[in-house]
Image 1 (cartoon, one colour):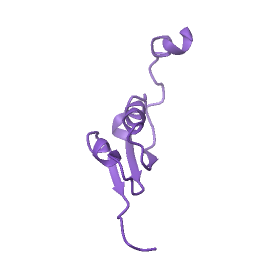
Image 2 (cartoon, helix red, strand yellow):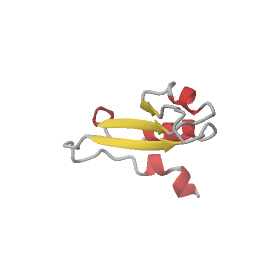
Image 3 (cartoon, rainbow, N blue to C red):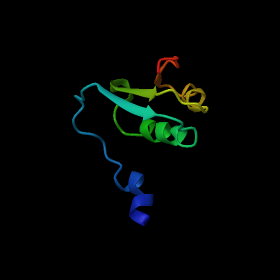
Length: 86
């Protein structure tokens, strides 16, 4: 437990390879109001170079406040259009 809790200070090393590829992370979400903020914050906290990282949240027609929460973060949001197609 102590190792996990202190992992950022124990494993704080400079990344040797500076030639990182562009990376896109996709986060699917459906009625994730309770969890989406923590998911985005954890993803943004990664050590990957921010200028090479793109985060996209795909909201598949949530009926809660998932999209409103996502809009508070520097990520892209793709929302499903709620249509009457059955």
